[in-house]
Image (cartoon, rainbow, N blue to C red):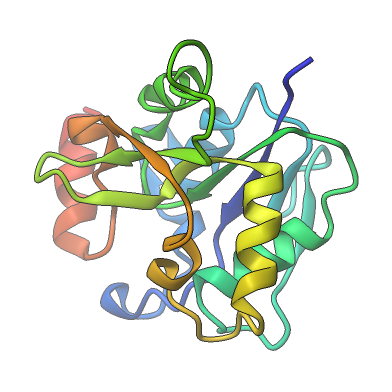
Length: 192
């Protein structure tokens, strides 16, 4: 049986948002963290890498050590506490409130014809840029990539993903993120 765990990254510095807790920023009726949890609703376990957020008893919280090591260090920390045998891992930055629209297509990309030999599937945005933080990775592939990388602190997502064979899944606006207050305001307008 194919199962999927999830790693949600919430611990970034949010420098372009003035250092606020990005996970707690509201877009529509929910926080960015709540949107991310909705995108991962069919995943188990769900690991959040970042500060503990009260009111989420069904998830595991962890941090990279030391904090601030970047997304690869956060993925490694989240992966390190996954205690199940999930065959796939959804990796999701918490700042994409439309990610729920992309997740089914990402999961589907790892099934069926042509999926053999593929290490994962990542979303591509409207400009065809790969989004490695809106992606599903095969567990064994992520294990190999993290081991080959060595120390994840400060490593780039490009270095982590370079040995992986990834399918691209065009998701358009579902990959839009909230990096700046202008982004947040535009996303809020969409949720009115």
